[in-house]
Image (cartoon, rainbow over the protein chains, first blue to last red):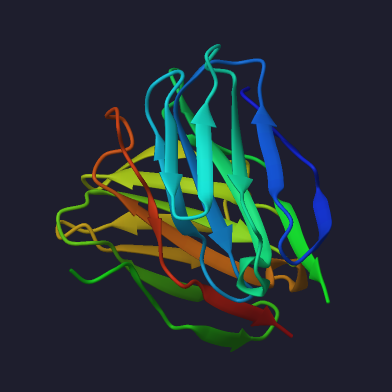
Length: 111
Length: 115
């Protein structure tokens, strides 16, 4: 079945640094969604992408839908302490109309 | 507009018991998906319902079941609980996952602890 490879698994960064994470697949997706999850809470939708090549921003967050429709990335600029959490990508493909999830990227900000 | 509501937030059950979790989707949303998340893990898909019909099912044993009512509210049931069922159970609501340009929104989850 369809799978998503999300990397990196975790990131240790200094406050103020830019962050980049991505998801790749061997399958084509029609929709890419990026979520952030904080401990004990449900994931919160950050950005939704619907067209190949689409670049969308939400404050300091920017995400792109890859031209090949097989990948997406999320960038966070000038990270701040409240950015800590786990970031998940999810893709919706052609086949079984089920959201396919990446394993998550855990963002930790070094004091 | 109210978000996705899951009840209860926390639950402690004993091995062998059964449990029912509830999810009220965003008004107008007809698709409800359920996920299991164990500590430090990603989201494991349980099943998805639309208009009272189960459309997709993940690889979980038959002890995990669900249903959806005519008002789109959904319940999931776990029978004969095992220690390994301890997890955060998340419900996601969307207008219709099978349509393009669809987004999914999550509830806060139900934290189930089996002792």
